[in-house]
Structure formats: structure tokens, C-alpha cells
Length: 148
Image (cartoon, rainbow, N blue to C red; front, top):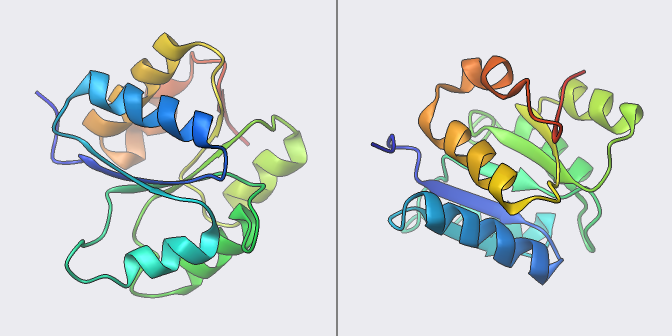
């Protein structure tokens, strides 16, 4: 049974990556909601819509136009009303400096976009069904999960 964490917001300007991400969520559980925006500024616009409510997780690509993932993460974590939303950096990067920066800015997790759809599904299922504080230990065996 999937936990109550069923609302995911992904900020990424690559429509193919977003489609694959949302398809993986749907495969795990069709009742999961996958909200999509193309940049950090749209994250804040989305979060300002009271009818929608806060997502359970925000996945942020690093390289986006208008407001990139770093700036968005900084603003999320400095906003007392939004800082409790777990933010996961979701990028093609696997550079140590990016991983270290993500965790230092308050990211809950750093995921390199998996090349394998099945791995993405398994990772998202663990994210959706486990407490946030146990994600890193639960995900340690996946090559896409990067730990500082």
C-alpha cells in the first residue's frame, strides 16, 4: 500500500525527462499526482495556489531557465512556510561539487537521473513509501542516489 506521500512536483524544462518521471509515478500507483513546472519561478507560482496545496516532495533539476534549481532550493529553504517540503535535486550531474552543494543548501536527496526506467520506478516507490529520514539508507544501493 502506498503511503500518503502521493503528490509530487517536478521542476524540469526537459519535457522528455518529465514525461518519464510522471510515467514512473503512474506505474507505481495511478492515484499519485505528478505536477509539472518548467523552472523555479513556476515552483513558487504553483506553491502560491491555495487550492492545490503543498506537494509531498519537490524534485528540482539544476539547469532550468529563468530560475535554476539552486536558486529555487535556496528560496524554498529560506521560506518558513515552505522549508518543510522535502526538496530532491534531480539532475544529469553527478559532480561531487553539485552533490555537496545540494546537501549544504538543504536538499533531502540528490538523484542523478537514472538511465534505466525500472530503477527510476524503484527509487520513486521507496521515496513515496518511506519516511524522509530513512531515504538515504533505503536508497544506498542505487547508482543514481548520490550521498555527500
